[in-house]
Image (cartoon, rainbow, N blue to C red; front, side, top):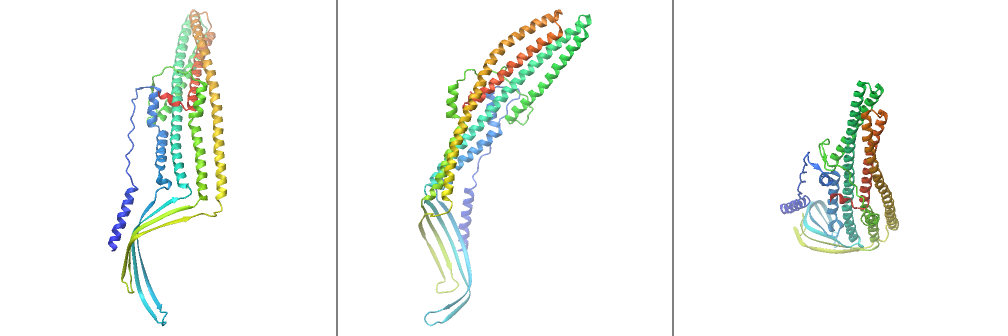
Length: 454
């Protein structure tokens, strides 16, 4: 009998262990990208969405919320337990009869009991708490998907901004390299004029100072480009952070056709943070309903099927075995627990606060959208203005260089023309990048940042 009970017990525990240890396939290996491959923004985003650690982590967290949104986790399903046990008692017994008062004594009586069975417990009703808990888990599942979307949108906005920052810094490096070449040409002309006696030593020294200053600025800009390249490699989760990057774009193209009404409508209907705030309100309402479930009675069902074997050390019966089914229903109601009303009042306040937080977030999003929209429109005007300035600055420089070669223009005025050209190139580049940043922010706030994958 003992061997039978031990076999059943070990078999049950082994099955439970296998049920709790599912096998899952390992993660797929990351695909690398060629170093010399010219990267477009879309290609960068595709690589980043596959490799970036923040994105991969939040996707795993979403899988956890999906796994939690089950009827069993909410308590809808019964619990089934396999139970086995063995007890033994070693007693000394003294008995007195009612009829004649005679006494009998027994020593070292050893009674044994062994049992094995299956027990089922199921909560049939608990004031709708289980159903509300399941709805709350489904709500958390949707919030997990929204959190993934928020992380992906943040990542895409950051990578898009850094991509155009890298392009901006690369173009600025090119402008500084051109400035060095112009200064070198001016220095060459100054040296030749100085040798023939047409320029003073002061003009030559000033040309050399300006050439060295432009060279130093060019070298400093190389550090800025390197820092931006490292940041992109970090966002792409590449082990070699100093990996060379080649981008296909040669200019910063801005979208000048954004519409205010469309942006506002999309913000109020599709902004992920605003949708998340709405789910926070729903979670607060579910928490209140779970507390209100304590105002109702509960109904529990329990049943079992098992075998019990008793071995007696004394008495008329040497042993007894029972095999059978038992079932029962219990109904209860919590009359008083001291905290119910307080907790429900606080839960109602939490619902109100969640709704106020959502309204505050909506107002904040409207304000941010308006600020970025004004900056976006102003920077578009600045681009048009600086385009005209750049044309004039280039023509002014060409005229100044021709006069400088002929010796009709002092070195200081030549430097001013060169500086005006470099400043015009710098201003239009900055205006284009600032406009692009405003565009990215407007698309992110309106929940449309995925457009950069198209």
